[in-house]
Length: 264
Ligand SMILES: [Zn+2]
Ligand SMILES: [Zn+2]
Image 1 (spheres, rainbow, N blue to C red):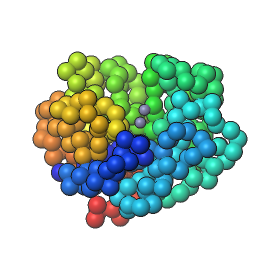
Image 2: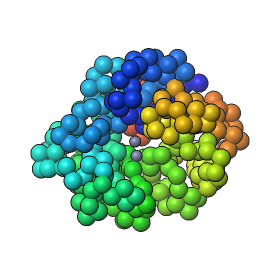
Image 3: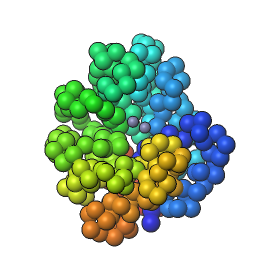
Image 4: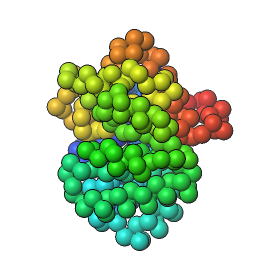
């Protein structure tokens, strides 16, 4: 199986002991590309994922300010985001969005920083990676008419929310939660999503899928989510691997470049 982990936090200190080995294990498990999320601890450091992407040709990066860190954003942050967004290994702007569960930054600040980063993505012609928690309606209100689409990362909504995101042109990215016994609503959403809008991710080091639940998550474990997604959709895991990989390619590299990446 050839797989993509479309969302991993490889800069996390939980990988300090064995980062290279974790990346090697992923490659050995068939994870041929990884999208490292560049939010880290927030501004001023916006390059935590790019530093990793510089070291591995199969590893790509995002840049962005997580809603938790929205209050740390300054004018300089947006200027640098605009510059970094043009970097060829930056595939998307994210993860950006709204988190009303923790409220680490005031909600009006979260909304402003989210909106400004959506504008950065539109200007750069790149998709967005959305983080949304207990803020669904406000998130939907912001993401109308995005020219380059995006990813609902770690999608844990139900079927109705899945339809709303799909109607807005979004891809749904499923992670470890899909494998949790109580997540039947998420599996329903995964069942109804059209094949060309599915992605898989780990969100490592968080949210390890069954049977690794409770342990540190790592990109190799995306295989378990692929297996579960295949069961849910009644098709072979190889098919889920194939479509999620092709979807990632199309969304992040664009139709023009799809033909160039056949060596992948
Ligand atoms: Zn997130
Ligand atoms: Zn994340």
